Image 1: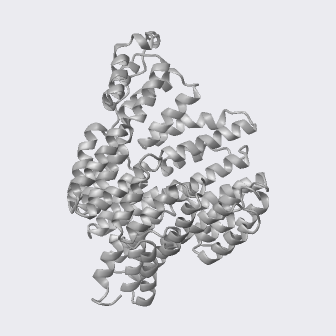
Image 2: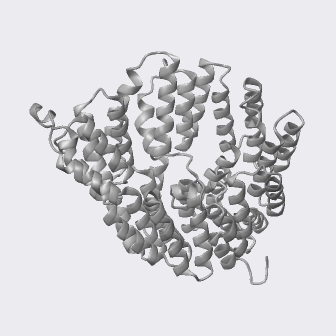
Image 3: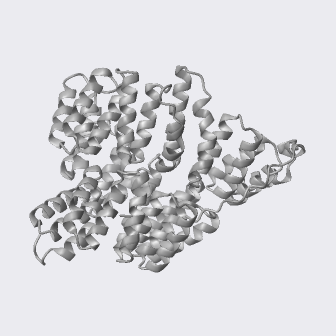
Length: 569
């Protein structure tokens, strides 16, 4: 399958908030300037700087970014830093790269310059440049708790702001495991887990525990790795150790691990046990509501969320989930009402997108787009996210050509942006423009030949349309070298086997992918491989479980319609 983008991860973000309370050709940098150029005029005297600030006030982000980058080309390190930050905030990556190179050149020992330079480089999948800037930050630091926390925070920042695979490829080779603390090793292990390299993640967790046997963070990482590997007993044992090592912050560890293992009833019993041990009842009830939602028990989830609302103990996330429950049950009016309640909250963008989806599904395209336009006029800083949302909504509601048009237009505002270029290529395939999609992916891959997302997307597209299956498999296996446990890439590899007439050979690969990620598209492929291999009963079980989780999955519904006899559930 084509790997989902960050937009599709919003459901995961929502759960976390509830519980916690690309043809990239960036502007070519000028040659290193002569020494005299380092003495720039003060920022307030630079005409381009003034026009950049004026453009920002008018909401003209691209002009602001480009003017600032132009001023930075002959300006001070401080001005280059300002230019980098503005361009990044504006998602103008060519301007950000030009300014970041200038800043890093003028201030090579400035930690912030190195971090921003690396961030832009990683967004552009310029791994060697990022590695070169980050390596000194890893090696040239004091051995104390403050430095440990700073490095762990840097890893977390890059995990959040850039692609996990790119960040892992840039950072991991420079880690000195002999001098690293348990905290640092755990941070790198979490990065490896995000990059779907379970062997390295487990290795880092064991190294961290060898450094500090009482590290609850390292033990929690080990529990997560074991869940991903399907080692239920090992994951539960590690979770119990976390609770022993950190009774306060680790009190929900076992419940979370049981939920991740799909042992819903055991997770519920553990949460009820915690209720009797002095844990705040509202926190237990929020988790029980989310557990019911994630397991597909919408009636129980609704009852629990409503109870929290009536008791005055619900947060904004609870309202969002109640709206989603109403949406899934077909009660569009209630869902829209509840989404509107979130208009002045941190959930406003998510709620607006969901509400627009309901309107589109009801044939009210004009109202849907007007709703998003209204949000954007009040929140111009959300233009990039809304652009992706518009494209995805159109694609999901049978207007992939409209999605392509949105992304094509957006590339004029955000030139050469890797995410938009990738999404456009994927949307072309969704629109049935297969040859154009392949051509676009080929062009992107030529500029980022090691990017596993592109390798997988091109490989899967070729396989799904029965084109050059041998090359498709080669591309997918190349992606797996850098992200060996990525469920989307494993799904693609299995799909090649199905296309080659070997569904039995595909089923163990799909079983592994489905263990790692309960994605409905993987479930559709897994069930289809089982069905074609003659294991109809097991295929039905996989599909039934997936439908309980994602009853609106178009991929699942299309697969069932195609394979099951008419009138047979």
